[in-house]
Length: 346
Image (cartoon, rainbow, N blue to C red; front, side, top):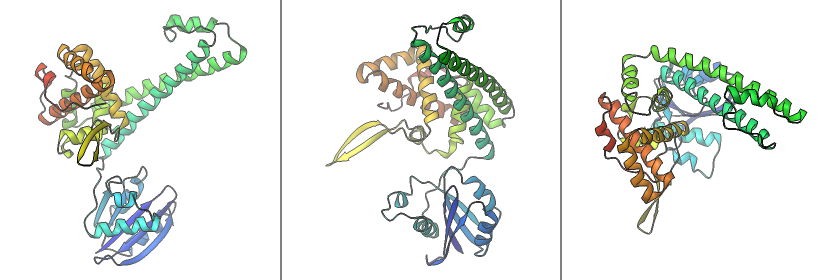
């Protein structure tokens, strides 16, 4: 058996082949635009196993190698610290280390979403991209109007838009406002189109996903947007061994600093999915507003830790409730309001 370590970049790919004794058999750098040469190089050393890090562009390579490799491993880049922290860093060295670790069966694996999960994630992240672009256009319009002391709260409602058309501004600002308003309206149409696509996607959900959507929808303040984000970003909930691992995926666990035998809790790590973390915090604000019990928990935390840390703690507790519902398949009920989970400082 041969073991192929692959250091993949946007334009080039470096491969290193070792045997069971971790002796280097071959090394080569090829261009990504030459996939047939990459495939041919690997097939020379069949039977072989291969490993590649979970970068943003590995999927095309995975699809090429999967039919011919005895085993493919997706490496977790942050857990493979021997490469991340190497002082002698090069493409050839990285590929060699990957190959050696694969031969020793010591590669920390990363989760590879299913095809449906990948498609779901694309749609959900595109919707979030459009949300941000829409907000940016609106903010720029308000910024221009603030120079004339002409901003108003209902600016993007029917009366506000009519008012906007008659505001006395300079010709340059009028052109900018016209383009920004056109952009905002265009993005709005795209968001409606994407919402329809996501609704159709949800209707085609397999039974397990449909059940997950249903149980999450029983939580007060958790709507379709939050459900889409949670399911697309987390994927298969059974891959997590504990709720703490799920919270870590959302970056809602506190960092730790150890010194002289003392351990100090820091702010949350903010690692993992930024979109998931944002959705949970937004949902936490809504659940606090809609549930008296959640509001009491929030107020208790706020008095001791402040507003920001309190809402992050609520977000983590809410995630713990979501995990419990997804694992049991049971709908939400008021007893979950006081479910005991670790509070997380913000």
